[in-house]
Every structure is written in structure tokens, then in C-alpha cells.
Image 1 (cartoon, one colour):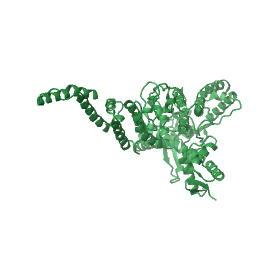
Image 2 (cartoon, rainbow, N blue to C red; image 1 turned 45 degrees about the horizontal axis):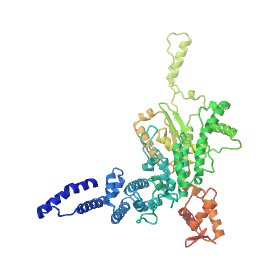
Image 3 (cartoon, one colour; image 1 turned 180 degrees about the horizontal axis):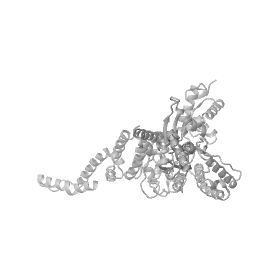
Image 4 (cartoon, rainbow, N blue to C red; image 1 turned 60 degrees about the vertical axis):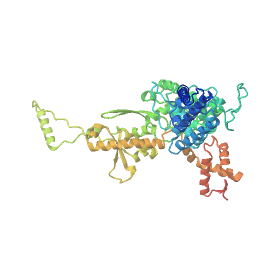
Length: 608
């Protein structure tokens, strides 16, 4: 736009003014040549001030708004213009972005647009450092920022065919796309205060703030990784990478290796030893599975009889984050395969034992019904629950018992035909076969499943909700038992056609399935079926241990503040203390309410 504006002033506006003045004064040289430049500067200033008022809109629509950014680049040639731009943009950001209604994903995407646009606007990075400061501060205060950044770095934006993948609301598409770009070789130098080997060094600009550090590259990841301290990013990386590695069993992990190398440049090799071991474990497990399968195919009769392939991931427990250890009774064929697999592992890795975590992993399930078949990949406890609904062969005479009994008239006709056939009467019609009575569907109650599988009721109900949502099970309320939830029974839907024949039953079943699907999705989002325990789960699980350490430290050292207690817990506890000062403050406050500690100012002491 500025190029067009310059040409219009030079070729359109100036000749017009010259002609007017010539008519009025008769002198064609009334104004000097530098006045044309002044008019140009005035026009660019007017245009720049108009652009500044809509700068936030240009940022959000980057890079379609590149032309407007280039117009602003010609406007900010004076300190006053630069100051006007930064102040106006900070007001727009505070009003339209930094509030509770904006999601963290949206703020991160906008922050990336700000980085790209302001690097184009001011390559030295002075303006970016000024306008990004409140955005960075706000992102640090959000609890899910680090998790979203790491999750987005691990997310795939394209499938194996190159098609765009629809991302969840917790994934930043802009961050995910950054992983497709080459990693800058100088990411590690981003936060170096002074590089003595740089022969092209220049002093900081005069309008730079004391916190200014010149950006040596336009790499967006360098700005994102500098949001947090190293320890915070490493803890979040361990949890999310562990979850990601356990879910992607068939991957070659090329993207994960690349991401780990990127973090090494930023955080250092020694700080990511645990992540390297985790990645090595899953790669080594693939080789170990193949080796054990080859041994079992030759030596194990059980492995050949059971048409199921068991693969495992063998993890070094010390380096992995806390994993969920829900225990329950697995189907008998799976238990046999696990014993054979364990024997094969011990034959290869002498003096090492396996500790199974049955709640982790995935199970490929194939279900056959009267009118359909269903193949799904489900969680282990969901597979264990549906396996409990299998028909048993305990009664070999069940087929005879299922026949409908004859009436008196049918019995007389049957005896008459038998007498006629006995004396050799011709053309005696055989007795028609009676239709077999249809077997009732297999039914189980929540209480029965909990007892048979030795599984927590919450997991049983979660699995039942999942199968109701897929129209495999139908929830029924028993006549006896009133409102007792444990007496609620679930029956297998053998035939959808018979269920759909009754309009009322079909509508009720469809509504129940839809509600169950929504409820299952909400449960999975809230509690999650993740393999890695959340920070809240770890805090609750180890609460008593932390309390004992706190009491011991305060008894030995006297009154201490929450920040010092947090630092000593990180040093004293084996495996580290994955929480911050805020969580420690909550723990100490709870101990004050219970009368274990007393608070004096900002410090805490043992109550005497």
C-alpha cells in the first residue's frame, strides 16, 4: 500500500498542487522539492496510525495480512511511532486475548503469529520483546501451557497419505506444524548472553530494555521453550512422552527422536537421560517381542494352541513416570500366554523378572453375534469385562432342555403315528420337529462382575458404559433390589434386528447407547484412560510420605517457608518431587488445619 501511496503523491497529488498554485500565483516553483517528501511522510504516518488501530486483527490473520505489516514497517521509523505501536498493541492484547475466555491453545497460536509478524516488522526483536512480555507472563500462569506445548510438538498434522488430520482442542496446530520445519542449528545459542566467538557482534540498540536479548534466528520453538524453567519442561515432557510412547506401539518414533534431539539442544543431554531411556525401552521392546515369539513358536504348546498374539513393552521402571497399576483378573487364555511369555523373557534376560501392569496397553477384540460381527481396539479392563459375558458350556444337555414341551393333543398324535409306523402303514407323516426355545441372553450384574474379575467398581462401570455405547450390552433394572445400583444387570444384545422390531425398545436402546457414548467420552476426558498417573493422583497417593518428610524437616530445622520446604523435598525424595511451591503451600495449609503444624507469618513449624 505504501508503494502505491508514494506513487500517487509523486505522480498525482504533487502535479495537482503545482497546477493549482500556478493558477493562483503564476509561479510554477512555489514549493520546494523536499515538500513532496514531507507530504509522503505525512501520508505514511496517517496510514500507519490507521493500521496500528487494527494491528491485532492483522496478527490473527497472519500471513494474509503481510501487506499491512509491511506498511507498518515503513511507519515505525521514529521512536514516537514505535512507542505508539507497542502501547496500542498491548492494550489490544489485554482487551482481546489475555482473559479467562481465551483458551490456552488460542493464546499459544496467537503468540506464534505475534512472533512471526513482529520479526518481519522489526528483525532486531526489540518490539517483539516488549509486546511479548505480558503474553509470556500470562502463559506461565496457565497450568496447561507446558502440557499443550509438549503434546502439540508430538502431534501429527498429516496422516500417512498426506491428508490433513483433525486435531483436538488441546493441540496447537501452529506448534505441530513447526515440527515439520528444519531444526535451527543455533537454537542452543538463543539464550547465551554473549558469544565471544561471534565476529559480527553489535551492541544492543539504544531503545532496548535491560531484559532484551537479540534473537539469532526466527525459530518459533526457541521462543516457546524459553517460556519455562528447564525442570518444569522436563517433568512435563517425561509424562507426556511416556503416555505417547505407550499409545504408539507400531510407530518407528522418528518424530519422537527428532523432538528429543531438539530438547537436547535447548535443555542439555544430561537432563534428558530419562527420556532417552524411555525411547530406548520401546524400541528395544519391539526387538524383544520378535525374539520371544520365535522361541515360543518352537517350544511352547500353549502358544501354538491359543490363536492370540501377545506383545509387551518392557519398561525400566526407575526412569518412567508413575504408571497406573489397576489390578484385575485377566481371561484365562491371556494369563497362560503371559506365563509363557515371562518364561521366554527370563530365558533371554537371566536374573530379571517381569512385573505385569494389566491396565496398560490395548486389546484387539472380535465379537460375533447372531446378526453381526464387531471388531474393536479397546482397553484391557474393557476387554476383560466383555469376556465375562461369554456363554459357558457347563450344561451339555442344554439343547434338549431348550425344546418346547408338547401339548396333550400333540402327544396323542405323536403316539398314533408311532403305532401306524409300527404295523407298517404306508404314507405316515413323520412327527414335525418342535422349534427350539431361544436361549435367553447372557446377563451379569455389576456385583457379579466385580467379584469375578476382582476389579474396582469404577472400572467395571466404565467398561459397561463403553459397551452399552457400542450397542453390545443393554442395561436392565432387576425387579428385586429396588434402587441398589449393584443390582443393575446388563444383557448381551444378540440380535439388533429383534431389538429394532419393537419400536419402543429400539428407541430406548438407541437413546441409552447415545447417552452411554457421551458419558464414556466425558469419563475418559475427566479421569482419562491414560497410562501415566496425573500429578493429582501422585500427590494423593504419596500424601502420607510427604507429610512425614515435612514433619521431619521442620522438627530438625525449625520454622521454614513453603519455598524452602519445596526445595528440600526435591533434594530429599528419591525420584524427585514433581510439584511446585503452590502445591506445597496447599499441603502445609492442610496440615495447619489438622493441627499438625502452626503458621507464623510466611513460615511453618511443628505444633508443640
